[in-house]
Image: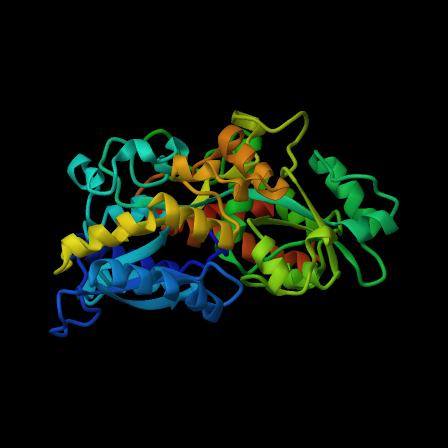
Length: 438
C-alpha cells in the first residue's frame, strides 16, 4: 500500500468491523444531503508527498471527467493515519463517499463488512473486464473464491533505495543483496551521526510489511490455512527479531527511529542522514524533498541468501491501492463510470507515471514512462518475488496487533535493551490473544 498508512487502533477496528457486518453502506453525497445525482464524492488516499500535492495532481483529472460525463466529483484526500477509521465509521453510519481508495491489504477485511460493491462479472464488464488487469494485482482485491471487493488502481512493490554518495564515501561499490551484506554495509556507514538504514518503528503498517516479508523468508505466514492467527511460530519470532535487531543488535538503525511515523524515514534519507531505506515507489517523494534522480539508486530488497523469488525468497508484499464503491451509492452508474475512467489506459499511464507507481492495467504498462530503472526493479519484483498479505477478514486487526508488538519491541531497543526471542514471543503472544479476544 502506498505511503505506508498507520492503522487505526485495534479496539476501534474490531468494534467497527463487528457493527459494520450488520450495517454496511455509504452515502452518495458524503453526508446524506440531497445533492444532484450528477455529483459523486471520492475519498482518495494520500499518494504524493503531501495532501496538497495530491489535490493538484487529481483535480485536473476530475475536471476532465466532469467535462466528459457531466458528473462532478467532490474530492477529499484522506491521510493514511485516518483513512481506515474513516472508512469503518462510514460503513456503520451510512455517511460515506460513493467511491474510495483502500489499501489493497484491507480488501478482505472491508469485504467482510458487506458495505462494498462486489465486482462480479457484470460490474467488471462495465469497466472493460477482468482481463484488463494484472493477475497479481487482482490477487489482493478480496478473499479467494469471492467476487473482488475493489479493483486495482496503483500497483507497487518494495525496493531498497540507497544514497550513492554515502556509499562511495564509505568505499561501498554496490547495494547489498542479502541481509548479512546489508548489516555489513550499514555498519560501515553508521557513525558520525549517519546511519545505515532508516525505519519507522511507530508506523504499524510499515512494521507489518517488513516482518511479513521476513516471515516468508523464515517460512512463516502469520495465519494458518484456515485463516486463524499464528503469530508465535518459530519463523514469525525469528522474522520479528531480525527486523528489530537491525536497531537493537546490529546498530544500523538510529534509536530515534523507534518513534518515527509515516514518511519520516524518507525525510532522513533525502537529507543524507541515512544511507538506505526500504520503501514503495519513492521517486516522487525524493524529488519533492530536493533529491536529484542521480543521487540515489535502487535495488531489490535483500533476501537471506541467493536471489529473490518465491517461497522463502519473497522480498516484497504485493503493495498497491484499490478503488472501491460503496454498495448503497445513489449513483451507481456514475460511480462505475468514474472507476472506468480512473482505470482507463490513458489515466493509468498519466497517474501512475506521476506517482511513480506501476499500472495494474496491462495495456498501460507498455508506455515508455514505465521503463525507468527504478520501475523496472518494482515491476520485476511484482512479477517474480512479491506475495500478497493474507486476504483474510482479520487482516486489518493483524496489522494493528502485530504492528504494535513490533513498535513495542523497537521501543525496548531504543531504550538500550536487546529483546530476546522470549521477549519477541511474549509480544506476539499478546498480539495473538488480542485477536482471539475479538
